[in-house]
Length: 313
Ligand SMILES: [Zn+2]
Ligand SMILES: [Zn+2]
Image (cartoon, rainbow, N blue to C red; front, side, top):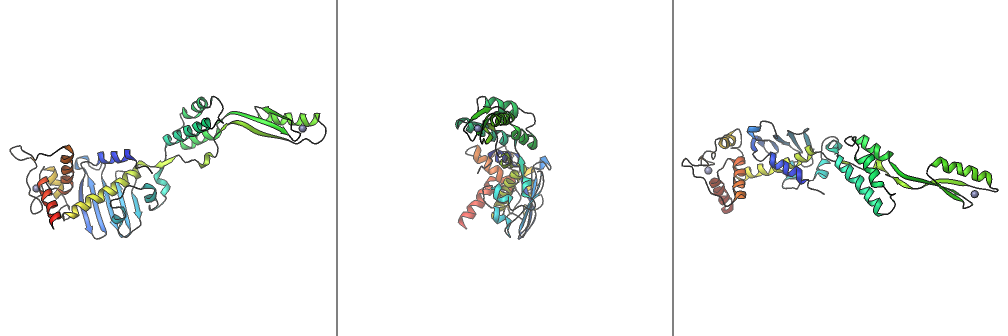
């Protein structure tokens, strides 16, 4: 199974400055909002849970509702995304999260041809013909058209007419084989049973069994958003800060470039009036603290204080 790293990277990029607002938090009834205020609704999403269900709705193709456990946060918490299994938990038709993927079509066609060449049954010139008639076609973006091209494709087809008396002949068309059969029977005495079969050539077989679909980016993005959103929520809860994330307390601390007010934080600006700021080991450490600040509103010093408390208590 693939982890869809491109979608993961895209999600990380698009939500890097997201802030969480707890709009409602009462047992299994929760409503969390994630957004970058400067972006408005772009890339924003809401997670809503009630017993047995989780809905994610936001800047995606559509909303998704999944159901499995009474607490759906428990179902997703800390998991790697699993689109196959999770799509089985969707309300409604799971096929809607699958989408025709032209690249997948092209890859499968090439693999099939390469295998036929390796196995020695592909006629000479097959690669060129497949390119000209299928891969270079301008209709590949439509699954129906693409499938039809595959189904209709044939190359280097030959037929062999064979008689029960062991006489045989090769032809390039089926009807020529049949004609040979009838003249052979006329010219011979006794019983002659002629059959005409395709003896060589290349076609794509069982095309109806091939699948050219993969998960829609929107669903994959939603899978990442669910796991990520839950982990943000859990961290805020670990600090006992979920009440502070209600309303705009965290958001305004972040927009004013400071720590949230006492008692949870110290209220101090992240960059002091004399221009000094905390120095970090490296860019990674700085980014970790910044991400945490955007979620909790806590400056690095207050984050450390809380972490120390969590360790000692
Ligand atoms: Zn015969
Ligand atoms: Zn602070």
